[in-house]
Length: 307
Image (tube, rainbow, N blue to C red; front, side):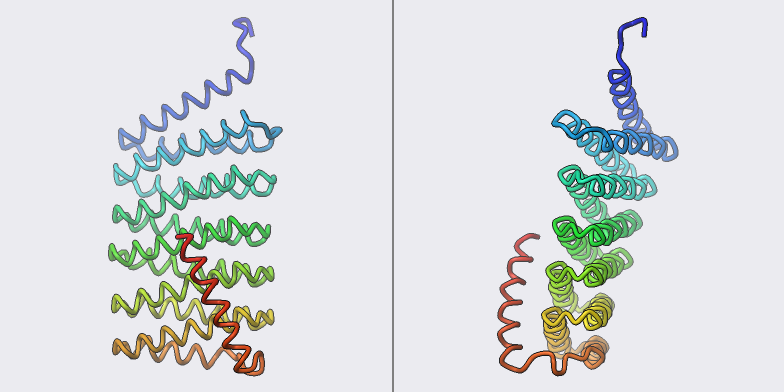
């Protein structure tokens, strides 16, 4: 290095140039080269994750993560949904790799940006990007379940709840249904790992989404929630998760009663059928059920405060 520039300095210069190039290509509407820049930034971040953790290293990784998110926001303004979708996938890859290396603050930073992007895409009416980024959140939640990282599971679930609610409001049918499905899948993944708190959280959030869908007279969303709850109940039953089963039975009954009151016969029938398919008989007696429901309702209020 005749100029006295160290390899570290050269890497930092490459990162800065790539960030600048990413913004330039995004503003010019060049999808292909914007994606290439984002992939290159992902490579830099993954390299840094495997270096010794220190304050400077963490700041550098977070700067790369933030830059990918900012380039995605520019891409959203330019209606480049493919770039938006790629950004979500890239950030989740970074989040899960950081989590696997016990770099939780970095992982949570990446996940939080994916969540905020997903909500932003839905808010802007970008249905394809919102749906794809919901899938990325689902991937992150399921991956976090395998690693038993409850903070990341919880964040993934809450972000999917918000994306679903925004999608209902914006009329993004496919994105909203997808977010509900991925939320249910995280719950199932948590049940398979016997993470009761995260499984319960998924069930509580699904109940809230079901109630919202019914109050909005949106039968397709309500049925999607009922299906997700039924699938989650099946998994919880196999794992003998009594508290979760009580919650799911309660959720389905609440949705059924609301649907009946609204005259939504299809959702009412679906909820009743789901209830019949989930066998809670013999798990708890009536008094224990009432006590568990009281506990679950307290848990419900704590979860919804997160959002």
